Image 1 (cartoon, rainbow over the protein chains, first blue to last red):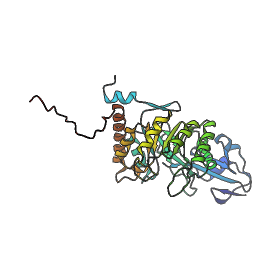
Image 2 (image 1 turned 180 degrees about the vertical axis):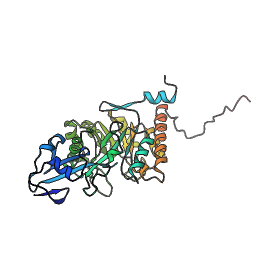
Image 3 (image 1 turned 90 degrees about the vertical axis):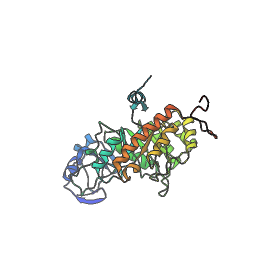
Length: 66
Length: 264
């Protein structure tokens, strides 16, 4: 199925869980916050959060700023 | 009465929403040549509160070190900013994302209006302040140096009001000290100078006015030697604070001899 991750179209296996998506992308899960369709998914909900075709996922982290 | 410098400093704490701090320098983490240099500068500055931003993970940089590999949240209080937000909705979203990290419920609220001046949108800033305070954030609000706006933000529940000394990143120092003095007279909550600082003397001037602390980023990060500047900022901040506490002499139009001119 297709997901839009941080603005990029990507193909993943059907019904992938958010935690698994983060793992497959090689993103360090302890420093990332996830939004699905503009809804923040709390870190402890990620392992059980099943994604659907067309979902928009945003993975956000702290960067330098003033 | 405190007699040594260390005693004076240790007794001179301040609080933001019940959390106690001693360092009066807040330092940003943007624009450094490297994260290693940034970490060294934070250490040298003596800061306890560091601002950070939130942005998309770059998916091409798999497994790369992140900012938090260089900043220990146990050592520093992280102050996530809402930089780059041009509406209260966007700023609130970023604050929610920051809190969802589980690392900090502090937010440096910044709702901008104009890309060239980076001046804040006062109405959107006020609205977002009200909402985020209600939601339990510790809200430190960036504003212009308008004393009326500063009072409105305090009334809205801001835990700290942070007028710009001059435009963000401009290095012009505190352009209107009179407005800052009026804000200090009117507000009971902590007032910090946020933005516009260019050099150590700018920090000292701001602290002498009586602000609780100064927040800066570019002045260190873009100095020719950022590490030296971080040291300079720390000393200037402490000197300015001590000068404020000590109480300066009044300015006079005519000379006053320092040496007795009789009895010789």
